[in-house]
Length: 315
Length: 208
Image 1 (tube, each protein chain N blue to C red):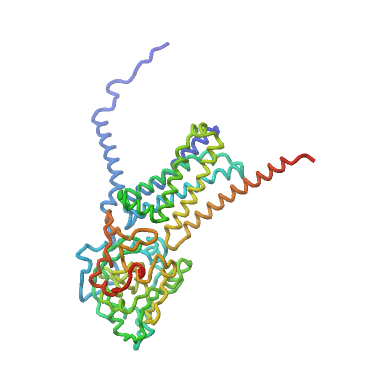
Image 2: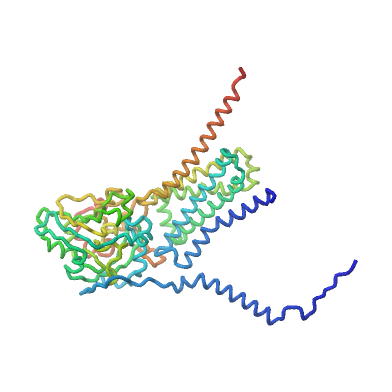
């Protein structure tokens, strides 16, 4: 039997310099692959504010100096069921919500009803920027630099009669422009309401912009309600009608699940949502939950509106 | 290809496919693909896939009984174990990331709120199934007893669907789809069971 004879010579082996460089090459490749995966996370280009610029005469920080949540997060994580029920749906479907032409009708128990078209929404009252905390009933929160005007300015303009006890805000009803309305997820159109003294409180505001730009559709363009001491769902979006009425209006989420979403919906860490605690919240962009503040931190300004009320019952 | 090789390849392919949702979750987590609230998004995704694998694990048996297909049965244990693995990841995500091991908050959630309670019970239900998933366990328990225990899979899936229904605020479409799938699978089992009973009763009749 012939013995096996190695016919490879020393010189046939891969020279050390070469295999060393190959090893380096592989390391480089692996690093490159990991880098390719990680780079977007680290150097993720954030969307910068876009859209028509709005000039605000006055700026107020009403969020205790906290840095605003990035534009990208505010405009990509939305509860606006008329544009889809997943958080990222509204941004994806934003294109369908065409806001020109737009008509906002202000009527009901008022002496001087008012109709505003798209361009008048941002021109009729002096605009100001206000940075507010926004607390969602789902226990997350943001810090948002809104641009808009006090709701009280509009209330004063239309001169409510003595019968005006509540103010109702109605979202556009249009299955083309708000395709989420094709499914009966909620009883469309969306209606929210405030008591008249809440509506005239200086913190209640109608927003037409965000970060100095016109509101993007997913945030409720062209005009929406912002009530910073209440859960976010009170802030009706894409409003077409503001009606002054005598009786407490039936609001949308309250009709859907009365024990979960009260009419007042004041941010209250003491009153849990039946399915989750309201004691803490996650600020978007933060890992640890933080304690929720009564009236979302605006108790000093608004608590007196509810003196004598049992806020466990009137939640 | 021998049948054994085919089964092996099928198992390998299924195993790889079952890891895809996890891989995509990791990739999205690293690249910011989970959006503004990644903790919530990841937890929701893991819960969704748990329910998916839980439902998928219930498909092979009726397919075998109704159509005589054998190959899905060979994947059943793997699908079930992946359901358990995703459920465990979902649970750990909730405990470690969402609540950051806040035992007090977690206990309050489970004790006070039916939505978390039913999810927790559903997860507990999966433990005896996972622990008795080996061939040795089948031998030790005896097949009839093992089978009875493993009907808990239906209970776990039902509790999982209820957990999902109680999670959403208004849009019941997705939990509804799981509910319909589960109801169909249960109906198939009941139909098989009753037709077999009837056949058995006929055979038991004395000959004319």
